[in-house]
Image 1: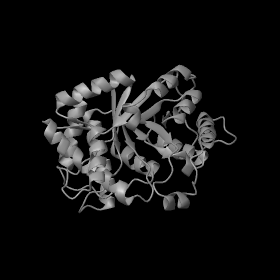
Image 2: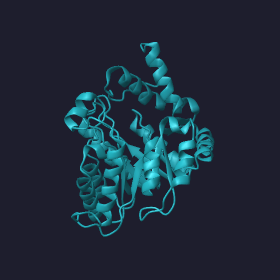
Image 3: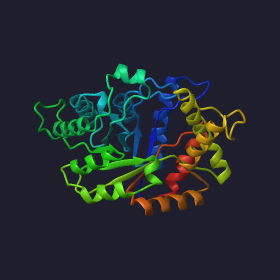
Image 4: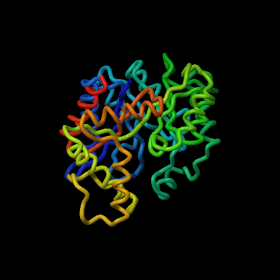
Length: 320
């Protein structure tokens, strides 16, 4: 079972956004030492609480600080970019870190209407995404109308962050997928359709599924739940304010949460995998049995970075 990490460069109280970026690079170093397959970073524009707006730039810094671990984007949002720009950014990354680069792409728009407006991405157009994805593949294959520079010396893998129709597009284009959220606990028919409809391509000979979710490991179930609480409470706040607040030191459900916020936080906890090593192993084995996943991508974060490192290392040891 391949195992990877996704880090969104979450800010923390009393630590700057610039420090959050440095924290991400440091986490990549310890992920490499622990034996993770790849380290992914995200694209979020103008979202307080998340300092990662430029995956290609951040991955270049991570590549310079590591030597083996693969570098992934989870993901670059194609509605925000011309396909040739994405192709050239990742061709440059591959020139800097040969054979270590993975390109994850999605079609989500900005987090709020003002962000979508300044990104000039007002509609999530599935047809345009399919066309952009085809253009991106052509540029990376060297079959586009122009040649990207630096010209890639090897094929850069593409992964599609997919839900619903995105899975169908990925199957048609012969690309691996990354799935998460409700799909992991709900109807798995779209995943079965993706595998059934998959058309082999130069990028992948067979379908491949990565499941993405928060995974936190601690000595006990209660301790791990406390680690997961920081992000769950921040998620509840974001539903109310439209902003992700910095992670803060909270290990129990705060008394001041409204019933609606408390319900939202509980949903976040229920959607994550957290617990002792035995609990986490059992839940991940069940998840892999249900989904047929080829890779697990942990997107977990928590306020206590020492506890986060211990969790990452325990998870790597658990699935080694």
